[in-house]
Image 1: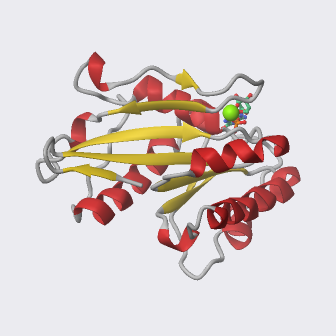
Image 2 (image 1 turned 90 degrees about the vertical axis):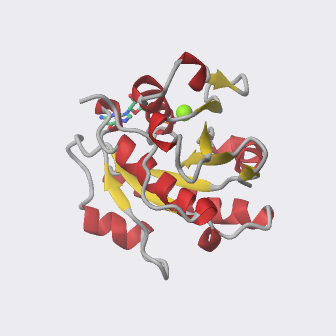
Length: 209
Ligand SMILES: Nc1nc2c(ncn2[C@@H]2O[C@H](COP(=O)(O)OP(=O)(O)O)[C@@H](O)[C@H]2O)c(=O)[nH]1
Ligand SMILES: [Mg+2]
């Protein structure tokens, strides 16, 4: 749940990277952490691991340079990944608590389609368990690993994952090359800023050229 502090003029939003194991969620966070533009070193938190397991929940937050002046509000973005392995569903639910926006990271490879579908279905179930509804939460789809040979066409991924009542923005990505990473983050951030501040487009930051 976004926190709007009228006294300090701070908006705090929580974005969760969700998807099947190995789709590239951690890679997204690492790329954002490495490349996001912030005002000074204090505006970017350390990448923190919330749990000790082979597939960790990662977290960091930052105040991007570009959003400092949206309606006088400073916006703090908190980014989380969830562990993708099946056994960690309890952790995924905990991480989803208070979520404002979601980047669903799908693995574009044909052989991963069932895992994508399963994770997407489980996302909705996990939200329902928290009395949340995906229809009420801004989210984008990221079709990652486009560099690999056996990937499904975008149309197919759209057909499988983006066929709900409202079509959402979807991005092709090569997260390990930082391609599509900021496109996804900026878009979901823009949706959040619009929702909570009614502000126009103000992406959280582009990586250096
Ligand atoms: N070929 C390719 N590999 C990727 C891409 N993005 C991530 N990976 C790799 O996929 C593996 C799983 O990525 P990771 O971020 O740990 O997935 P997570 O389980 O969703 O957090 C790692 O070896 C990454 O380097 C991509 O765009 N293309
Ligand atoms: Mg991971």
